[in-house]
Length: 459
Length: 102
Image 1 (cartoon, rainbow over the protein chains, first blue to last red):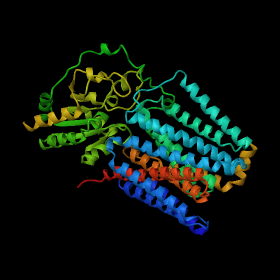
Image 2 (cartoon, chains in turn brown, orange):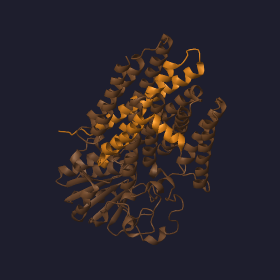
Image 3 (spheres, chains in turn yellow, green):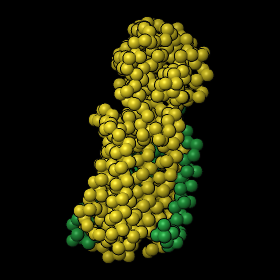
Image 4 (tube, chains in turn cyan, orange):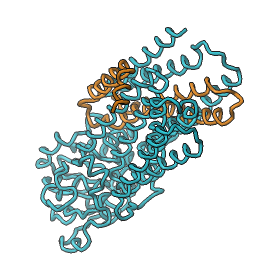
């Protein structure tokens, strides 16, 4: 029996590695996900049935019920959610994983207090699981708009560090003294939960994907710790894989945004403190209407569309596809320029456009499209702001200085669709809007684009 | 420090596996196109749900009369399954959209 279960775990572990590897290539990604899922199913079934323990049937029934409930709810949420809500959903699921790890620790602590190694792993599992759970919930709330503002208590960096140090000392005391006190255990759990909140609350919404990726990595570490506790290889290797892959992914995301991990966590983006007062000095803006914009695009040879999160919020990804098809039919050469962090997560915009059947090869990545802007007649920016802000090139004082951007200002004309003159997610003014080549098309993205399509139809 | 060395001494195999797995994770993820960051993160998130195995073990080892352990284990299994099933399903849905259209 023992050898069979170990064999099952070995197979599952291999599927995790192969699956993760396959997820890294567009052609094999879907299969890779399914392979990893199959391995996970195998590990779960094996854990339940392949052992020599005497287990009463009520426990089997309860395990079955729990799996059924979790599967149905998880499946329904995953199937029903809108594609724009994807990032926060990943965060929510991740939080559940962390909570699961913390709960396991709560049960196991009492049985293992006498063993320092075991109780150290259990206590670490509880702390990390609790931090991931509450942190993920805050990230979820921030991304879906429930928690709007960036909350910063004064000296939050110092306070956060003091809290984590206190938690570690407290945990160390519990392990060293070996007291089996349920109350202290719940105090430890609560401090972990509080730290998760304190950790994520001051971080701006634009940095949330990085935070989710980091928390995801932490859940992996919590799973690996639980694996050490049970001497269970599939949990250990699976958890560590997610942990180290998550860290690499986090760093890759930071790189795409030209941010360091430190500046994300310790918040160099002064959300509110940005640029009050400078706004007026930037010159005048020119606004346009759908019919003028339609005429300009109708007679253009090359049009590049720059979609941003505003497009997704307005649910305009289908209309933009219609616009692009209409222009193509009229002989205009249309492309989409995709900034690495367009949307709310790297690759999010590709998912959204793919959902509305935009051809995969019409999406051009930043490095490839940037040299082409000088030959572009019209750039249509829809709901994007910071990723086209020239301040990233020419204003060393700007918080986004040095971030790779789409060089749309090299095009002959720029049409920017925006709801109003609000600053972007990073809270920074955009001088592109005051450029003499820029016309602003104010209005909700969906309404404005629908008007554009209607005007083009009549031409 | 002594306890740390003792841990490594007693768990030499685990320590090796741990370190090798870290490198495997790094190698597997290296040079992934930004387009796939979102699905990859989602897939990795589903994998971290492997903690469900621990939750099941808690229930298998628990005494049915121990209501606290049973209910904590039960909730842990539900949450773990949510992470696994939801995670894989949502990743699959995302990747569905990357299929090349003819």
